[in-house]
Length: 275
Ligand SMILES: [Zn+2]
Image (cartoon, helix red, strand yellow):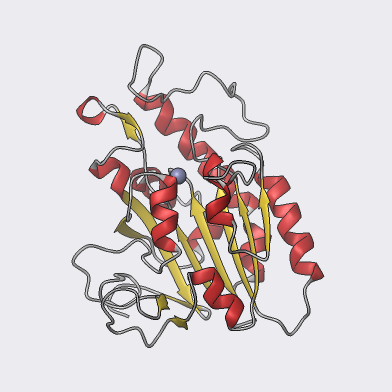
């Protein structure tokens, strides 16, 4: 349905990881959405970025005057009474406590699935991000995309045909330890560990995160196809440091954690700069 919305956060996916795979033609399904943009994330860790996303502050292309690509110029998800209003006419105008509540008030069925611990509803802090959804599923680890997609597919099949949906998916395979089902390397030890150390390996981190992303692309094929006429936002919530300035992993403010990939399609139309 044209009014349906799909929002995917590729957890910790660095911009350069996405760009390398995208340029090599290894992300056919994600690349089919729209051109790739180099954007700035609102925070350097999962909770911070998603809390901002829920208020409409999605990643933005620095210095870009285009609405949607730069939330400062105009928001895809415009909450009433939050921040400076701008050229928001193209996106969705929402009331309520957050984006999910806003879509629910518009009559949408709101469905979400998260992979990283900030979406674990068994902890009080982890319950916050998933709480606004009518239906929410926590994967239990960062490498269960196939189970998340099974759950989402069943949820989508359950809904009424004429009710629009807002679907959120947080993908964990691109998060440390950079592993996916069937990968030809062991899940642990991770090549990227906070504070570094002898086991940290920037080259191996890049290789594994990219391989995970390419695997994720293939898994997402049918979900993306279902939303081909709809609004789709794909981004990372933050990146990871791989030894730049002596830093590793995320939760630290650095260009490597703040620069993220962004792709957007509005009601079936790809969003390019200047469009
Ligand atoms: Zn994250």
